[in-house]
Image (cartoon, rainbow, N blue to C red; front, side, top):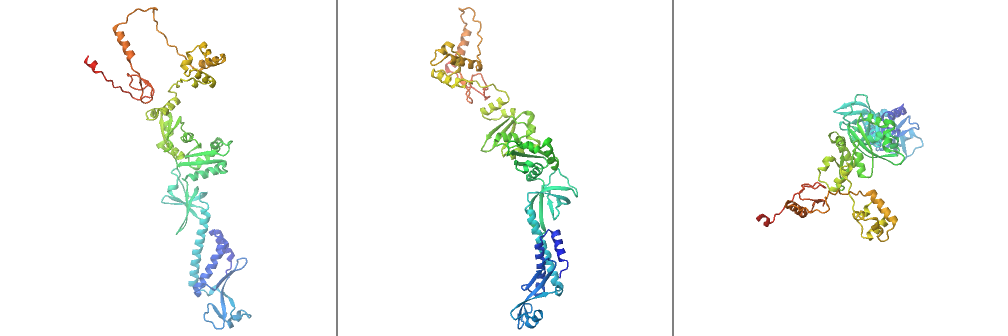
Length: 499
């Protein structure tokens, strides 16, 4: 029976990708279905293959009885003796069934069941195979296009590359080679659906694993990837070894590796930057290729940061239609606002922060120091000795002569030389130029107008800025230190008004 069965089984295994055991099981189900269609039941049907599976036989198991009541399940003794002379009543006998005895309806029913079974087996087999490959790269060939979706020949089956998973830069033609990533695998009533993608960040990661051995063997780790498909990709990398530069490994010698990746992505721009645990450094790196002067963390709880750049770097930091800063936001998970120095100075931010920016751009002088303890290089024991003598201010110290310093308690010649050397190196003494006073005895009587001006100068009051505390005068409209606007209200005495 079933001549050439082994060849048919091997052909099914090769074409359908089904295991040999499942093909044999399908043939068995096919014969049992035909038997059931013919005799109404398959409880007593037995299917047997020979050792090399080149032949298959179908048997009916019947019980030997004296009087037959059910010819499907029972056989008379006299008839059984013709098959086996040693049989007795109560024994079971296997009687081979010739498939030629099956009618046309039984054969058609069995074939339909066999085809359905084979389809289900093939679907389950392919599902298991491709479901394990979700997230892996696969290469196929352009087969056809429908409603913007591209169907890709994967060999055993076909996959679909939806329009939403296609890069806007890419154009495909029939028989084009397409490298993509398996995104998901689904079972549908019409068959197996394998969804492919070329736009997800994991696709970029798989390409880097193929092109950069250090990424594949985890010497260089990819911290995070953000992408605007077809336009720009940013990825942060770090190295597990101190002697390996993560960015240099991804770029390759003379940019060979990164050029291969850019070609695969059809010219999409790729920014590779070093990951850093310090958010300021990480944000600064994320805004590459722009050069950032200063990063200010405005609110760590809300993860808001400010990046200060030069005027020439502003457009580069923001990018076309805000793409660069938008990708940087997603990469570092902070809300980054990019400003120039002038724009920053117009913002309502604390004085300390503005001083930091001004110092960075060289627009403010160094802050003067007042106390001896702040002098660079001043030994602590000298600070303590001077403090014991009630000398803490630098101004007091520089007005003292060498003799006065030596007269201090516990002060030696070496100590005085050290103090004078430190003062000479770190303190600029500005001597006010005295006007020519003329004769030693000046008997000139000031005029009434000079007396009035002197009275005004002596009576002028000193004020402090309500914002920063710096000294101001009544004629100022803006604080020279912090820039806050000033206004004064002067109450005139009623007696002056009457006069």
